[in-house]
Amino acid sequence: FFFFFFFSLFANQICHTDLHFIAHDVGQHSYPLVPGHEIIGVVTKVGSKATDFKIGDIVGVGCMVESCLSCSACANDEEQYCKNTPTWTYGADTRHSLHGKNQVQTIGGYSDKFVVDHRFAVKFPFAKEDFESEGEFNEVLAKCAPLLCAGITMYSPCKKYIDVVKKVRDTQSLPSPQSLPSETPVKVGVRGLGGLGQMGIKILSTMNVEVFAISHSPNKEEEAKRIGANHFVLSSSVTAMNKLKRDHALDIILDTVGALPSEEDASPSTPEGGSPTSREDKRDKTPSPQEFYDVAADALATHVHYVLIGLNTKPVAITGTKFIWNDISLHGSLIGGVKQTKETVDFCWKHKIFPDVNIISVRDIPNVLQLLEKGNDSTKRYVIDASTFE
Image (cartoon, rainbow, N blue to C red; front, side):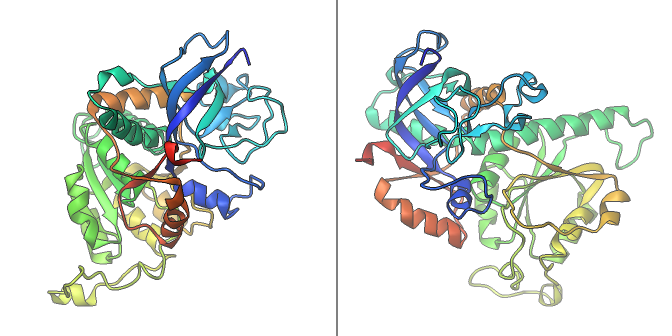
């Protein structure tokens, strides 16, 4: 245990990925299963070689607890893409001799204590003494826990693809609507306004970009603009999506939705308590699940990027020509390495970027998981108060 430290948990956020693992959607784990990979607490014991941490530090653990540390991905601080497979924080068998004995299933943060190799933890830039009351301290901890998954999951592609777009603009020689100077704000769409989407919008709002919230729910427009979106686009309306292409043409779409557009999304796009007010509204067509990605591709400019972030376990249907003719690249993005997770924590702390949270007790976990399974219509993250574990 020389490289380990122990900490007592204050909070753990419930992630939609927990639901995927519980339902065995991704097939990479076994039972019994203890979920939880957005873990925050205070160090209570430190191994002799874990010299970068001390008792009393506020620390967090995200989605990984070990990797090989020797492959090209690990050498590039991208442990999440370890060529020898990272060990996830829960439901995975240890394999790299960094998290206790090998071939032992990892146990997640639905608990009140945790132990981890110091190389897979991040330190938060504050201490309990910085706060005037216990309540204020606990509230900050609850808001910080989601940074360890939702935060890094959005920060990593935001930073990467904004930089890519700016570099492409700098290399284009002919002036045109699609060859803009790098100082012109990059136009970024965020599809889905759940926990990931709200973090993405808040992060992007500090990056000098133009933010477009894209949602099938018209009821989320006010909330999207409150947290930093410049525009709201109703994805269940072909008219609205076509207008997006005509008036703006996005450089990036970050797709945070972990499912194909459903038949429920294909219902008429009428605001709650209202009715269509124009002929265009009445004849507006809603994209089917198979059409959505083509409609989304039409909303993009050229030399741009569609990034899949939500954990969609079903095939995605696209028409190749939509992407080929406009040089649209389709990407996937998975969290970030430990170094970038620390960067995310520091960035969000500096800019005071935190998700809106609901703090729950352990008894509320089954109800919250059911809510997520049905399709959570809230933009808030649910955080478990670890003191309620018995």
